Image (cartoon, rainbow, N blue to C red):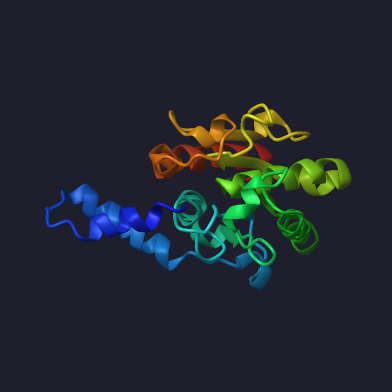
Length: 230
């Protein structure tokens, strides 16, 4: 999101020594920046699990850097790197800031691109267990796509075992859920003080805090994957 560059600049200019755990966190952050794009569904072989993710507004690549790559890495550590394919939503989804103001919190073209990837997972890899997630505008995108697919292509939506939504920009409008999609398969992360979860588009510091929720999100998705058969 728009404050990421400011925060990175402040950290880079700091002359303080950091404890070991902060060094480890920095290494994870570097790993995330290096994996801001992932196309393992489109370009790779089918795997037991497919994770489809939508980045937040203005983030780079198709996975972003805030929580997408970290969630992918967490699933690979939990389930085995060769068992998980990670796919970011790109193409017609350009994560432009202005699209947040559209009626569904993102563009129709972006929703169509997300739905295309869910359909691709279903046709290319019918036996894979799909899980998904999104951050900020990406959360609205995933929600809109799954809501539509649940009505238009139930078999495609039914293959999606779980969804995590970080900083869900349509949280208030959609009643804290994904319309038409099972609530037990959904986990919404809304930090205290994150006003985008309260029906506004005001971005404050809590909206940038969702890295703290990645482990819990991975655990939830792993539970949903286990329930689905892996």
